[in-house]
Picture 1 (tube, one colour):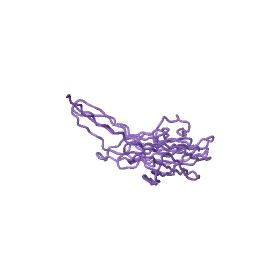
Picture 2 (cartoon, rainbow, N blue to C red):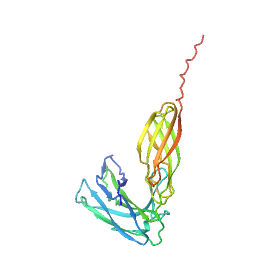
Picture 3 (cartoon, rainbow, N blue to C red):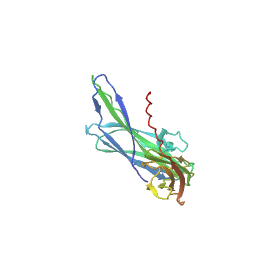
Picture 4 (tube, rainbow, N blue to C red):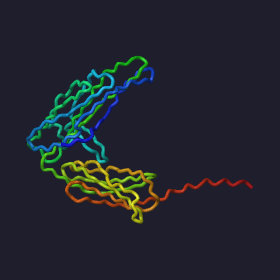
Length: 288
């Protein structure tokens, strides 16, 4: 089981009342951990894990908050965004395998609240990664507005994502293509990477840009692309703040898929054209 920084999505529920522009904001905070579970489980087995919810309040240390838990499917889009979907709506969903308790509770500031999650893998579960997420959100308080005031309430929504790994896991990364573009003050590289296996891979990479004389003008020894889910393809742009002089360049992107195979390198050419010169407006000829 490994953890990483948690995903936090904050939603603003705003009630605008006639009058002044004074805004009252809820200064509370919540944290959910672990943010990621990776559980290798055989078909027909069951295990229970615990989520810890830490609620802090800067205003009232005795006032509890109501929280609600739910399940959601999730994936990573081709351009690297984490996306959430209704539970059970995606092909590799594990949402129906999870039972959690409590589903709704009152949490007191300064205490850690636990949510128990039991995962039961069906006996006929196919090999590979199966994904789900436990979503914890704060129920909005009742807005008590007064005349000539405006209020803003912050409602937190957090996710702990699950990879349920059923044995028979395969990981096979392929470097499909590499695109490079230079604009004013910036280089954009877009490697197209694919995972032909059924389990997530987390590649590492490096970037080198050389001019026509073989001189390195850009060197990034450590680049961390987004994880590539099983059966997925990514094309996440990498933006580098660098102004290139006009000329021809060789762009090299080396990636190690950490799938047991040697690192592979993609090479593409990048031509930077001179900026077009804007001619000054000629002075109008004077009448003789």
